[in-house]
Image 1 (cartoon, one colour):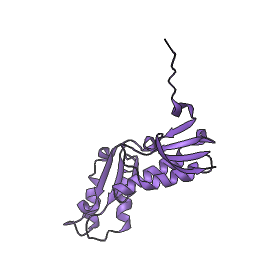
Image 2 (cartoon, rainbow, N blue to C red; image 1 turned 180 degrees about the horizontal axis):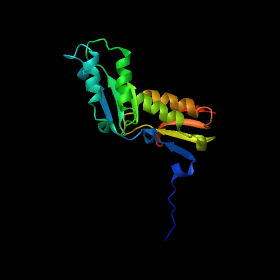
Image 3 (spheres, rainbow, N blue to C red; image 1 turned 30 degrees about the vertical axis):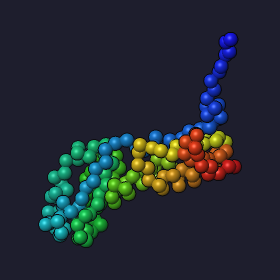
Image 4 (cartoon, rainbow, N blue to C red; image 1 turned 45 degrees about the vertical axis):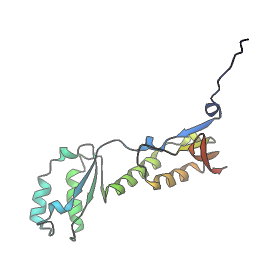
Amino acid sequence: MSEDFEIKNKVADSGLVNFDISALVPKGQRIGIDLKDFLFEGLILREKDFREKVGAINVEDYRDCYVYIYNSADAIVPLWAYFLLTAKITDSATKVVFGNREDLEVLLMHNAVQTYDFSDMTDKRILVKGCSEENIPENAYIELVEQLKPIAKSLMFGEACSNVPIFKN
């Protein structure tokens, strides 16, 4: 006795759009610049010395990189110092920000979510993937919901076999 069995992928047939937010993470090297390394004895900003050290930077070291500028020294650094350093590398770097690596990632994901075209998700049931190889800032998920709520039929978080409903329109 032979019967034909058809295997159906219920998830594929459900019309559910799987969205992996990690696909929005900009690719490229991240480099931090510590202003402490530009200070006299790691404590004092002397303009002449600072300008010389900034002038000696090889901008090619930052070509197509995402750069975050921070200050690990217990020293007050005038705002113009950040301007000078940024002006030196901004033509080579993809993006320059003030803050730590986490601040950089938050800003990069903010820009990615805000500029992504979600129009193909209009009136769709969307499942945002819960697990990712990438470290995604929590704020990116908040911004994602802000973008999807006005257009999606429904939004869920997790995996197809185990998800948490977020909203239904």
